[in-house]
Image (cartoon, one colour):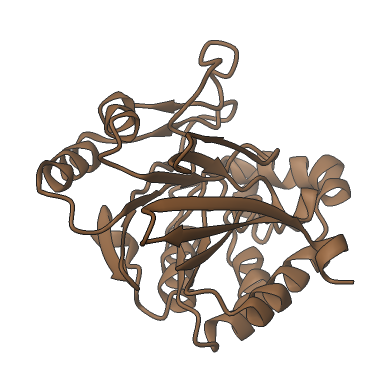
Length: 272
């Protein structure tokens, strides 16, 4: 069982309507104009799609932040680049990051929901999360942790309904490996220093991960890729940013040994 994991595209652009200057979108637009556009290269997303199509994994997982300000035009640009993957035989599981569910404006929220449904070919419905999807002998759990917040913070919230959902699922006897998909890391070794960017409400689910009731947590949000895995390959994996670090992860499950193996691939090396 092979999973390719990528995250944090941050496609951006100008404000798409005048109302963007009266909500948080202007922060995302400003950030993109003066910082992100010089850090994130969308050509790496195109290369990532080509790589996934070549590798033909059993599942592809995207852990959020397709956009910089959650605007419809930003989603449209990423849909165009991800369309070949959508049309392939590889299922794509994805959910929003904090930049995708950036504001409560209906057209932005609808664009986010429609993009997730469209790119996943209906496998993922935002309104039905928390959600369990079984594919190729793995139980995948998708939990939305991203909600519109104030101008200065990028924090997330693992709400009680999602926590209760995972507690109920993990109380049952495990029949298949469990892979949790979220935008934010569950494991945060510096919660005070990262208070504006951290996840709240994750403690009960984190205990499930530490207790191996959940085998793997796949996340993004932090743009530097890293993994925190034990000798069986269980733990948490952050994909980093595919457009900033030209990096994605390959996770394999070996059922005979009941172990996972993981490695990072850098597109400027693997595409040559």
